[in-house]
Amino acid sequence: MQTTTLSFANLHNHGELFANMLRARRELFIVHNKWNLPEAMGMEYDQYDTPASRWVVVHDELGRVLAGNRLTPTTTRCGIYSYMIRDAQRGLLETIPSDLLYEEAPQADHIWESSRLFVAHDVPASQRRAVHARLILELGNAARSLGATHCLTLLAATWPRWCDRVGVKMKGMGPVIEAEGAHQVVAMDFTQSLH
Image (cartoon, rainbow, N blue to C red; front, side):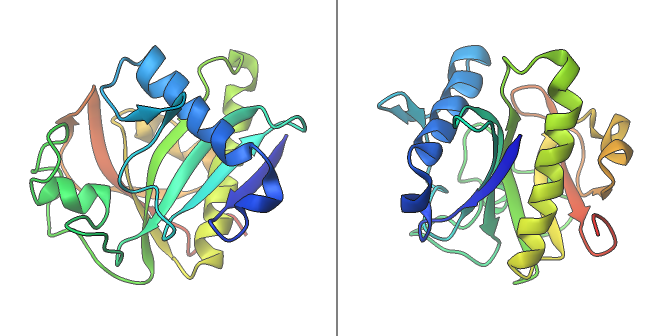
């Protein structure tokens, strides 16, 4: 199992890995979960897949994607969009309720958003915990390398059951909402963990 953090600056060094990650996102989110998301050429994407973002990918030596995640600075702007959680709060997204945070969505250099976090649905149950832990470990490493101490993410509301297993301190930042299932915005604190 390998991990790679992709950016527009290094995509050319990793062959089909970026496209494979977008294909794996399509397979899980559109085909398996039946979410209504944009797709093209067998890949899922949205307005947040920009040069400002980074993508953490867990894969095997052949480039088969096991898990992935997108990191986006909370300070970014692209037209009317900033980052998914903030844009949902601002009422710009139809599929995520605007009351997902207790306070105004932050915009700070040390806070990034973690979105599209997934483990491929065909990863065997016996490997899922290890793959998920590897993804979170690399997510923390990537976040810290970008100057982030915290990441906001919209997770399944079951996150309290597994957060201790991955060694990251997490805190709910809003109520449990209905968005393709029960979800909650969570802040992941990477200041003390994953050393």
